Image 1 (tube, rainbow, N blue to C red):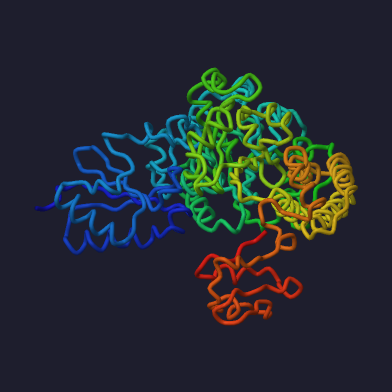
Image 2 (cartoon, rainbow, N blue to C red):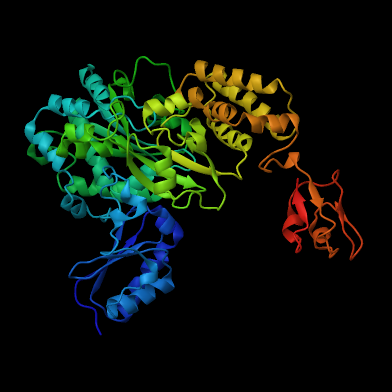
Length: 594
């Protein structure tokens, strides 16, 4: 039996898919289709959000009724060609969604609302015609035809859109301020310098739908009166950089960027700047310093970039997600967007759901949804079998909220009251195996390393805080250290120059607030309840289980294990380095940490 003409196989080729082996899966589809001389085309798409099911591929027959497969390997791809394309029978054990169970009805998607991610996973990000077929550049065409920048700004203001880069500043107000600032030339910048550990929102949007971001940037330029724009993107995102560069070239050739766009008389060109990976360059003024060829260091504000930014000219800076909202708002109206979310936090928010969660990936949800709905209903709860303990939200400058606070609504005001922040959208789920002291150390170590060093409180304060956390983890801390840690955290937050320093203490302060008993156990009992801080636990051999096989002694690198063959062994605590190799080697599970 031969496949009918018009079959299409679409493979998810964003970074998550590629990392899972999508290149090999696509090649397997190509090879099998060519070997059998089947009339089928192979396409690519971005991330649909289900990173936990990569590699994903969609098989579409000419008559409709697409089937989405997950967890694919080259071998499974070959079997799908044989059974589905040739035999007409889907391979049910790998199906993620089909006509019987459509994608939007799955628990992972049921509570999501796609605006920013509306095209991701459904178009070929390297083909502008795919973007146009989904309404791409229609919003730009509409605003240019109307010829009123004021109307565009009023629309964005009425929508209630706030900046999705972390600060939550009203987007329309920023645009108006830039437009009203005098200057011989004005600029717009897309901040794609996403550097939060565990965050991949902007990367996925740029890889899956770059034209929406470019369209939003062009609309922003028209609204504020700019003729030049820059996308500042991390060099560590090579696929996003390549697709962005290709999208800019395609838009220029179609007259959607460049001179006299769509015959309107509006000129707007876009340049691409690759950042070197400094986290602080996500801050507006540090980003501008980097663009100007200097070291990425924040400066005092005011003046704000809207008044004096790139090359001293008025500059409007929005992040990827903010700009990706704009075309939808223009096309569907401010009222429709404002109807989503809460009074103070309109619209949707994209999160990178990662960590110890069953269904990790990219999610877009209405503002006001609770953490519990995201983590348990969308994410499926714990993926390890251990109970969920906490969530780190807002990136390294965010806060750790315990499971008892999971009914907190996800909006700017509620998260701030809880001690966390919205941030750019990182959300890392932690289970009961996590040590909250260790988690605080990790995030503070990151912000300490990424500090530009300009202001004393951030440069020195984060270092002193980390020294206290190190003492706690090593069992060398004293009772007064917790009060000192809190005092330092508050001081760093108040006196630091930019957002990095101001929010760097958040992981420490929230873990102290919600998990103080863990800190106290480290100090008073010299014990790590999660058994993560190696200096605070001891390995013990259970003599009733030890067979004296000697496996532990053979792998110990420092000779801390001794005993006669056939008799229970002992561990010399003074020599033990807590490497854990003896635990892994013991066939009788006779060694445990206490």
